[in-house]
Image (cartoon, rainbow, N blue to C red; front, top):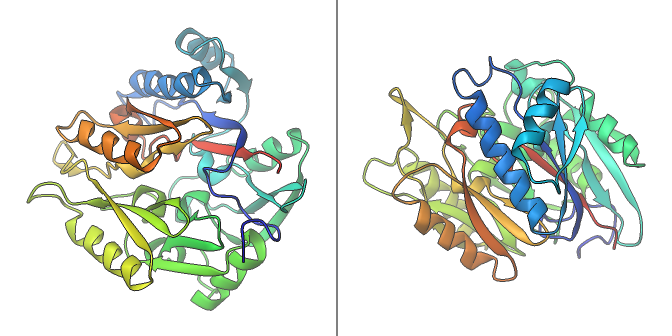
Length: 331
């Protein structure tokens, strides 16, 4: 299968018309970190907008609209929407294309990452964004979040067993059932199954915090940094599985051990956002940030790559890739 022979989800490096980003608004989700999280998300949105790509930043209400307007570049478009979490990678539309001139939005069941976080508006925001963009919306008969998968544009998708096989999502579906649905709904005809995601990832191991395709059959994976890297065994297992499947692994140093009050944080440079002209890498103020951004920059010679602080965003459970969803351009 080649890219877009049929309805399929393009890889993230496919040309984009715009990107949606969620603006943090809930002080309960970011206790003590909300203002800093807003500033960091605004820096992400501004960087993309200044690169020349359209950015649609969702804000919850007029108060947050005013706050966002004071922080972002004038090139960022603000849209007031009813949403709970900012993680539009999971609640926003997954836009598939047909290789000609067609686009439609796929939506799936959403249960708050296995029933953990159910917030007002998250069930509806994906269809609302799609319909206002003029897209037909098709709904799959299973639960899926966009951050649980990443494709390489040839029909190969990577995911984790921890998330996709988790009984808190689709307990009635087997591995074979899920593989069939990935092909039917998103055009993926081959699945690379990794094991666990990062320790303490609220999403039950979303793959976009662990492994990202950067070109056809080329997968970026973290390399453990320091003897106390808490995810060293997870990285090693993922690399072994990928190489056994014939996938080329491109290693990127991890941020190392990142803690808050003794709790291991799921900090990852893999949560980078690929946009049409720019790759934005979350950084955390560790000694490895410069090396991590440089390693990712080497994977995208056709785009500029920048690091943007994301430690406060991470306090809410995710990072820049999680908070964004792209509209692929028609081809």
